[in-house]
Length: 88
Length: 159
Image (cartoon, rainbow over all chains, first blue to last red; front, side, top):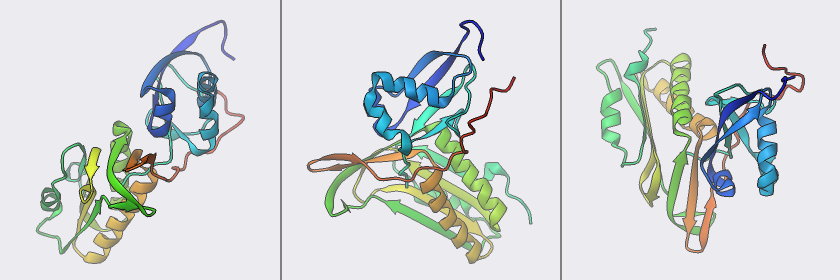
């Protein structure tokens, strides 16, 4: 468990429909040490309740690699929430 | 089998029209007997609705990383010479090329297989999204959810 109130800076990126819901392409947060990607998505859902409906159709990345939702974050990480991809 | 140096492959995420002939020229070498290409272009309808245009966006840095991984996998799996993959971003009109792939090889089976692998993998794993604009609105195209590592409920932060 994180002790005291140490925080870490994390950059969060949004794409496609998620970017439209959140209203911006990226944001920076100071998060409690040890929080997971899931925690970040859940906390965004507090201000943007519509996000919850997309949870099962979103994949997350950490530092440009697909990542499990349980991945703990570290200082300086870049997290992104990615809707189903439709390139080509 | 001699391995291609990574610098000999070519990857582009661009907002200008894709120069297909330049990509073909890039991959074609004296030892090649085949160049197979895939030209993905903007169709004029989607599920029976007339499409006006498409708008593509990408997580550009990650998309380039994933495209490089596709090329690396191709060199592992198939006896090919060079790979060139270009994807366009921004607004595209009907008929324009959104993605172009060129693969060269000494013999055609490897080039065909690698080119098919490249576009199929790109559509499943590369973070690019297209929004389709119709006369009465716009929608994000149905896509595929890339596979991610499984969640590990007991995972603890590395100390």
